Every structure is written in structure tokens, then in C-alpha cells.
Image (cartoon, rainbow, N blue to C red; front, side, top):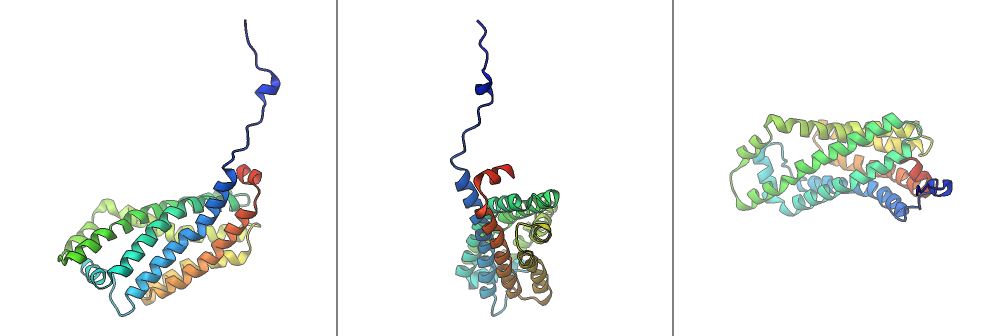
Amino acid sequence: MTQTTSPATAHAPHPLDPTRGFRRRAAAIALPLGFLGQLVANAAFSWATRDGGGDATGADALELYARQPEAMLVATVAALVGCLLIVPGALAAGRVLRPRSPRLTLAAVLLIITGYICYFGIVATNFVTLALAEAGLPAGAALDASQSYPAALPVFLLFVLGNMGGALLLAIAVFRSREVPAWAGVGILAWTVLHIVGLVVGSEWFEVAGGVLQIAGLSMITARALRLDDAEWARRG
């Protein structure tokens, strides 16, 4: 006997995913929180270097970590947690901005996620630097050598592209969007501009200021994501 499926059964709607609303809200909130982690890291580094010092070389990094171990540990943990949160947060931003600029938004989200995944790997090596500094080992040359491997270069380049270029493309997507106020794009773009200024003048506090403005802009994307209903959120996926 041949059993056939009735039209009502064949076209029965899929049940609503009970986690859809939670995932929307969690991803939306993760967006500014992820970059808040980077802001805390930059602020901790700025505080640690307020009287001089830095991490331009391995020897400089060891001296800084030995002098300011607590601040550098806070910076490391905050940056790592922030990187993890940025991944779902960037996906949430993509759903908000996708309707008007799907390709541009996709490029921005991919750059940001790839960049901060690479940054997670870079920052994780800080624990080694901290351990060497606490042990008082003269390993500055070894730290410099660890960053000179040709295979490590793409990791650093992808981070730079995601950190700077990803923010730039996301800001442009905001400008083209009708979902988020234009000033939010200005705040996001301020990160790229002030980060470059900070590198030129040699002050991390410009990055801190840029991070504050970036989070303000990203919070507008979060607010829009929280206002979307679950059906519209799923449709944009």
C-alpha cells in the first residue's frame, strides 16, 4: 500500500524557534560589549604607559609587563573577552544593516570577525610575556623573533584590516542605511580616524576616545536590533 503525504502535512509551517528572541537580544547586546572590552584594554594600556614605556620591542614589553602586571593582565583578559563577543555582535550588525547594503555589510562583517579572531590569537600571547616578565627572564630577543615568522604576517595584516577597514566599511553601511541615525556612523568612523591620530602622535588616549565614540555608534545598531521583531530578524538572516 502506497502512503502519500497530504498537502496540509507537506506545507505545514515550521514551529517558531523558541530561542530566536534570545539569540537576537544576546547578539545585539554583545556588539557594544565586545568593543567595550577593547576599550577597557586600551584604557588599561594607556594607564600602564602614562609615565612612559610601551611594547614596541620585546625588551620594552617585558619591562612594561614587569612594572605594570595588573594593568596588563586586565588589558589582556578584557581584549580576549571582547574578541569573543564581537563575533556574534558583528553578525547582529549585519542583520540590521543588510537590507540597504547587503554586499558592503557582508564585507564589513567578514572583515571585523576575521580581524578580531586574529587579534584573539595575538593577544593570547600576552600571557607568555607576562610569565617571562614575572620570572625576570631576558627574553626580549625571543619575543621579537616570535613575531618575525613570515607565517605570522597574515595574522597581523588581517587584524589591521578588520580593526581599521572593517570599522570604515561598517560606518559607510550605516550612512547608507535607513535603519540607524547617520551620527552613529560618525561615531564608528571616529575609531578609525582617532586610532590613526594616536599612532601618529604616540598617545593611546586617542584610541580610548575613539573607542568611546565607536561604542556610542554601535549602541544605535544594538537599539535597532532590539526593536526588530523576531519574524523580521529571521527574514534578514
